[in-house]
Image (cartoon, rainbow, N blue to C red; front, top):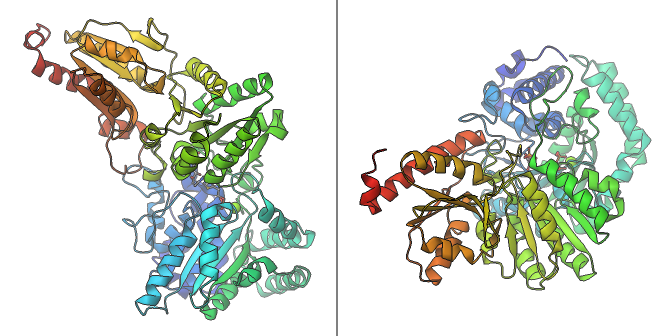
Length: 639
Ligand SMILES: Cc1ncc(C[n+]2csc(CCOP(=O)(O)OP(=O)(O)O)c2C)c(N)n1
Ligand SMILES: CC(=O)[C@@H](O)[C@H](O)COP(=O)(O)O
Ligand SMILES: [Mg+2]
């Protein structure tokens, strides 16, 4: 590839929208594709982002925008992580140096950015349902000439919602929904399950590999592909078609099927899409692509084809090393616990690497279940495993647990089953925007009877609380921790019931620190001290159920303050207030947490500053609150 900048190349620069794209000649498209790949690599190298998935859909996206008339026709991207190319072709190529930066381009489709983005997704397997609804709406409004195209990956196709939607779409013969299955054989890691095995048996056909290699060598490495190359290419493709049977499965469901289509042959994809558009009924276009295509460090990145690298060197693909993080600690500890306890099994919903379960899967391959992007199934399957005498540990991002709430409530908790849910990426995550902040779990989990929730403040506490969680055998447990590096170790100076006292104070303020908020709380306590306000800092460790010792502690303080990296509504702060109310303790309770709104993408530290989750903000507000209630403190010489 040529030298990379985060600026679009000449041809890409000239494409201000799909209309310009349609004017390009066939000979210009490989050049455009190469420029898009250059920009993808250059920009994600600087900002991090979903490189592999986007490298794989370059030709597919070009073809989609040449065939359909967006935004009148609607192109929906399932999950939305692979929409960078779509952004580039809809007038946003010049903004890629701002990708995932504050005020810059979002990493997912965004209505605010473009009329070409109608859904703001990023949780997987939803696009077919949106498409179903949109197409029904257009039909009812007499706009059936509009096409609705949903692009869904083989990974997202493992999600239950996708199958619920397929069932609906297939049942409506006059609904012009085009489902493009972008089949690259991978989620983060290879896609699992019966469907995936079936697709894999076609993909791994040697003939097909030959085609991909041929395309790779001839189509993308030269700026312009001449007729001899295409002739040869189509010759090979014809051979391929003769050998591989179409997917009977989709046709059996009642969907028209077009495939297999070589997703890196732009002309072939265009032809397939035009044919699909002509049907005016539900149709599947089965496109084969290679994740990371055209950038060898991604293609050869065995673990996940550079699904979402952080900052990296664009020339070598070498990633900036990540500091020791919470996920690593969990990763090590679950392996250790697995050695002690043969009944511990682990479950991931298609996120083996990101949740730190690779070492567990290597140590105990028979005790690891990747269930696909299927969080709901993960929880109820865990219930089954527990009913069968095992102790499942379900490792999932906090934001994705939202989907499996009912399963946790009814299938696990109602049965008082020993399932431990480990929530990674809890709290403000930042770069991935509104949908990826883990800011709801501590609120929704409050209502689950019999569930115990632990929030470790540092590495030793994560090890300790995880061990305590898997030791619980009469009901479910949750352990939650944030994204990123684990902070300094904070030793307790005493105990109040089962709570750790991190700082002993006089009876002014009781600071209840939730997990990693301990650092902030101790700093705030120091700032308060300078103002003549004494703060006791406690870490409950288990935030559900709350320790009864909190009631006695609250009674002897003038103000109780709860600091949590979770939505302010319904979280630990509200639970503390309720507990004190129920115990007739008349002391004001303040909660510092995430305001109840969807947060724009930015760095975590920046967001925390903006929402007032800093030691300075918390100390200042406490000082004001205390001053209002205590004339003695108001007259303190420090102020
Ligand atoms: C409900 C949900 N669970 C997990 C994820 C995390 N996730 C993001 S992309 C991805 C893999 C998607 O695979 P696929 O649809 O095949 O797209 P590809 O990246 O291969 O193009 C996963 C598991 C998610 N976005 N949503
Ligand atoms: C699209 C998606 O849901 C994930 O790929 C997400 O972007 C991962 O973020 P992390 O970098 O926190 O693993
Ligand atoms: Mg895939």
